[in-house]
Image (tube, rainbow, N blue to C red):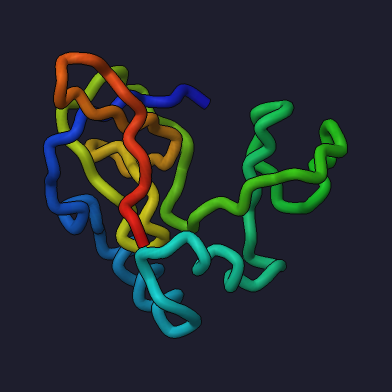
Length: 128
């Protein structure tokens, strides 16, 4: 997994949504509030995919069958983990889970940074 760096210039994340993505959003909006990370916990267990940050694999069961890691991250159904972008001067959020995504391809493995003062700083979530 190769994280992309995204500079903050807001764009509409809805431009990332295709027909399949819209169907996924509609399906999961029935089980919880979309746009917040808590919706991932409401995905039925048989339908979940997980990211193992120890062996860098996407797995369908917990613990990881490769390294037995138990602290796996539930993947958003809109995440695909195949971003080839390095630096993008735009910013987008996933319409389903609310996490920062690559505005070009929608992968969730990004590091969003802000350059307000000329120094790069990791962007933190909006206050609740």
